[in-house]
Length: 98
Image (tube, rainbow, N blue to C red; front, side, top):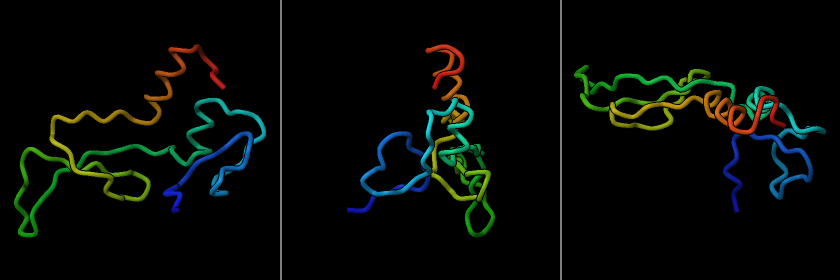
């Protein structure tokens, strides 16, 4: 069975797929983004046909670190960046979550 893992980290036992970066202590949320390879942002870009016509109502979600298209969404879709998701966790559980 394929692991389907691009990037990750782990803190205790080696995962069954043996992928990822091992860390001794649980990292802070900011460090976790870097260790897990999630320290990138999603940019929304317009989509065009091959002839250059704008496709209205849709956007491409693109990873800013490698220009990889992550998916196509309606233009109403709001991106929540990885750093925002972790900040929410920090606010919920308290600063310096580990």
